[in-house]
Length: 355
Image 1 (spheres, helix red, strand yellow):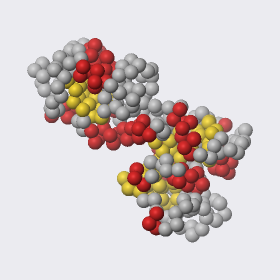
Image 2 (cartoon, helix red, strand yellow; image 1 turned 30 degrees about the vertical axis):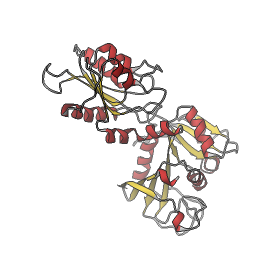
Image 3 (cartoon, rainbow, N blue to C red; image 1 turned 120 degrees about the vertical axis):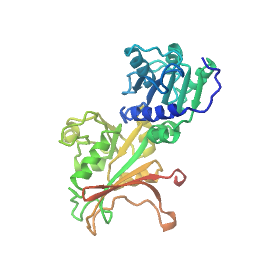
Image 4 (cartoon, rainbow, N blue to C red; image 1 turned 30 degrees about the horizontal axis):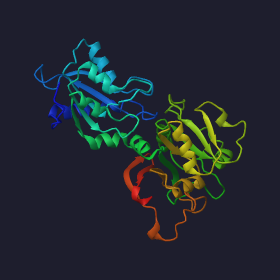
């Protein structure tokens, strides 16, 4: 094994990290665990540089972590991993949860070097790099870190802040209306925009609406594929508010579990969801709920579907935020602008210093 002194990554290791990040994206974006990929490289001098012994990625809670999956892949190929380099997108975990610690699995397999993109901020799982170094394994951290952090951004935020990452979804006319003067709202946005919104639902752990939306619109709060069938993953259906929900309605139909949180406090609702290991939340309620989450300072990203439609009157997309002057406006940082049929999707981050 190595001395434990970290050195600069090799070019083949950087290439392997790009591959590991691609593998990580195959795992589910939803669930309590992060998306992680791992590539095992043969020891230098044992063959062509960059020879891959095994690959793996995390397929969801309760399944083997990426490192263990890569070791299993190498074994299935009949390859010896002693002296190998493990290239992994997140620091190997050092705790026993649904599965054992990956740091121990790598040590027992005889891996001599570990190259990591992002250090693990989770206090209950961190420490893998320290254990590996203490055992004489070379550990390099920070390879392709920016791309790794981009992939893990919602999970990293949820771990750091102790609450789910919150995306606020808005679907409005060009003049910012979510309904016409008579209350009608179906459909302001196009089928393409609605299909994209359903794909987003399939990536989150929970959908959140208020009791007002639940009572007025009778939403199903399901994620559906392009053919209208239920997607494989159905998010938790969360209704926030003190009013009782009707016994029937579409929330009683097929879909994810329904959770009624009898509170009007967004922070209290998010604390309850965090306790259930919810990492990603999509807020889809009406203007009142949107304003409540924005005023509480707990919105991290906004997905605004804007249709080239003018209504001139009707409900605004967001209720009163208590902003009296333009200097106090909540300004977001645009991350992406994407055409969706006749509509446009604007993805924008709420800057941390704005909160």
